[in-house]
Image (cartoon, rainbow over all chains, first blue to last red; front, side, top):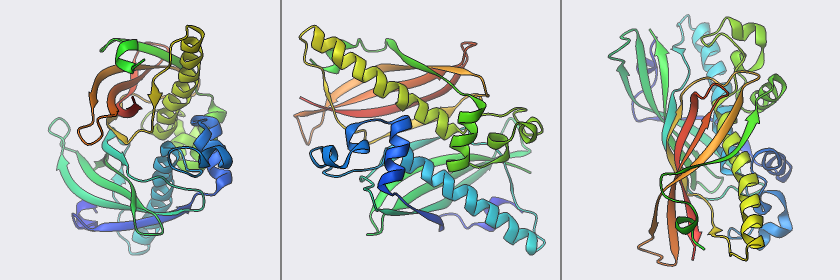
Length: 155
Length: 155
């Protein structure tokens, strides 16, 4: 079954949530984004956002973490209903990523995916290119991240 | 001194390189992108790209890792010349991210930044918004990643 048959265009599906502990924020930032406001609670208090917050690359990768887990669950769910799950391929990239609000230590981000569009590739009609809106909101319901991604589907 | 005074528009500056070991690829993917072709050399051989390759989120975060290190060096270099370094703020996001080729275990990616544009914010004339092209090439000179990012600068 194809993505467009399973997920109505424009309807957000929650894919999971992730709590950003200070420990996780610091560990990720130590590896990939060692700036004071991602590494040290005291220094972060004096910085622009006023508190320890996650690297944007961390909150972005968190979306993928939730999606992989969600997708494994969906494949199982569909198999149990004898429905062949969509065969997803790699993503060529994405666009329009916005870090809308800081993700502070202790925040829990709920991530979602919304299928926006699906079309056959002119050069490879056996492949579809799906456009998806990927988003995350904190525990106050405030949007903190969004981007539009593309993902290949083999038919 | 402002970014636009230090870096000519359109000229790529190398910011560092990163070798993606199998161990690093697997560790990142275990946390954020646990798909077989990012986790297991044998399973990866049978997958689309034919070998263990890094999560795109890993090769993207690698750009930031190199940039933070580069920027610390630049600030030191400028201070030594008694030049006040540009005051960079957070990035509101980026656009047009392309994962152009897989990054395989053992690949070394050289990352670069190119200042594309700089403009004052209409709403906050004391702030500039810089547009930068962020890119990475593997050891064969092939582009593997690119995105256009924006970064605030306080004047």
